[in-house]
Length: 338
Image (cartoon, rainbow, N blue to C red; front, side, top):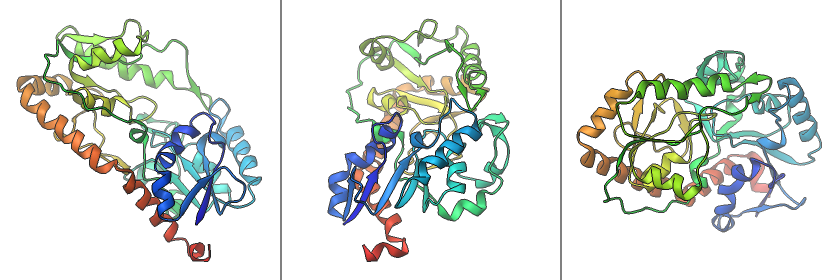
């Protein structure tokens, strides 16, 4: 039995990072992998919340992260469960640490892109302050976790034959009430313009369900408006994936969001015009895509919703996660001695 300790499981963001592993813990046990909080372990999983602090400068955050992992006495993996492809902070700790592997939910498919400078490492925010010039020196010890944020959703598939009075759902926070900083860079300067551009592009042409001044609604009212929308628009936030991506299929609505084809994640269910409708990040083809969907809504909706539901149930089967992690462990030279 391989015993794996989950470090600081209840710390903010670590819980969502490790949640899929715990959801599948009975299946893991069947293949000889036991997750534990005991100090009697063979390997440890160290989540990103234990080693990065986005409220501090990058240098201070990395120094604190290295101090944390220096106290770990056994073998460990760094597990970056963020919903973004950025490597900022976590890979910097990994580079200087003794971690055996770096696991992450989502990567850029093209690792060459990591060598370019992006705003806090987020390619979709444009040129900026962070790059990983030695990415190919690290690549051999980098793996996908085998899960992502959509694992944290346990969907109910609702009947959707009812009329949907809204053309579009824009039920997302905008504008941001207070500036959000990450390693001294103001995220709001990138987060808000993407949403403003979306709302400006829409104008008054469509019947839109939206929040007033970004004020959140009670959950029941929020989900009712999404259910009543033909198309659910999902702008990219601090990461590419979001719960509404699968909630759209739950409610029988068409998911429309910026193109996801540059992402590598496992599972991956984003297929343009098969499970969702891809648009340009700058929304330049948004009206064209909306009009395409609305022109034959019932048929397009049926095809996309059913495809998304089917692919989610197939690919997000927890047995797939177990097999992926088992394969990672099986490649370690010392595993047969445990």
